[in-house]
Length: 92
Image (cartoon, rainbow, N blue to C red; front, side, top):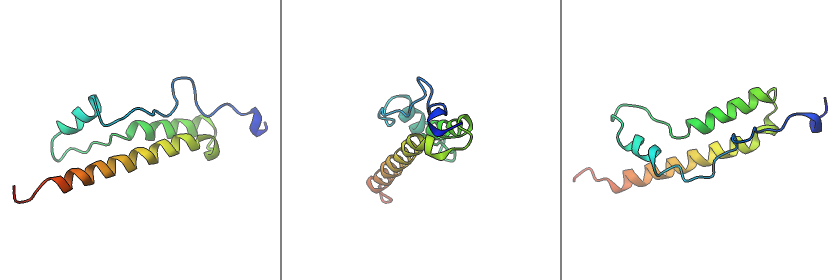
C-alpha cells in the first residue's frame, strides 16, 4: 500500500479543534477543581493524537496536524497558567 493509498489522518468530526479551549466548561472545570487535583485541558488533543497513530499504523507524518494542535494547546495552557501565577500575589 503506497502513502497515497493510506487512509486519511482524521475521521470526520475528529479533526483538531480550533475553538478557544479556555472558556466554557473546560475553564469552569479547571477553576473549580481541588488544588491538588491534576487537570490537563489538553488531554482531548493528546487522545486524538494517539488515536490517529493507532489508526494510521504509527505513521507520524499522517498525524502532524494532531501533534501541532496538542503543542499549541500546551503552549496556550502554559502561558495562561504563567499569567495567572504572575497576577496572584503572595502577599495578598
